[in-house]
Amino acid sequence: MNVKFDRELLFGRWFRHDIDEHNRKIVEYAQLSADGSFEFTFVIYIQKEGETEQAIEQVTELGDWGLVADIHFTITKNELIDEQLYAADLNNSENYHAYRVLQLNHHIFEYQHIESNEIFIMRKITDSIGHC
Image 1 (tube, rainbow, N blue to C red):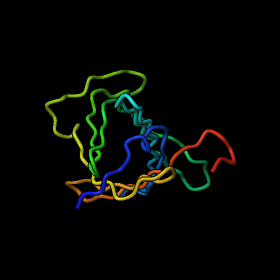
Image 2: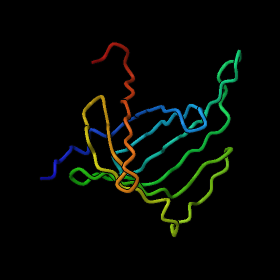
Image 3: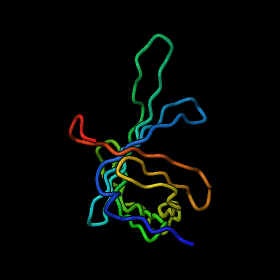
Image 4: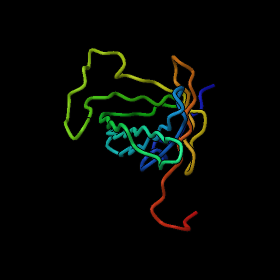
């Protein structure tokens, strides 16, 4: 039985952070708009001993997203790297992703990549302090 999630719950800004296999912190900021467009910004940070954390790479992906029942999908159409906009190769399968939604509410978006089974947990960014 498929679970149906409300698409409107995804509208807005989200974030997550993880540590990659090279012990670097990866932060993702996501803006999911009601018109089906998205902006995902990935920032990679390193921290050398005794120094403050430093961003070493930032990439922004632009494209389309959707939600059907419990399947969330994205299509990357452009990338912004070093303030230069590049068209994504729409023939490249790496620009198409599908995920099974595991949990979605006003605070948490948990989803699993259909092919890799990797699980991601994003948290909603609220604009008003103290708002529950």
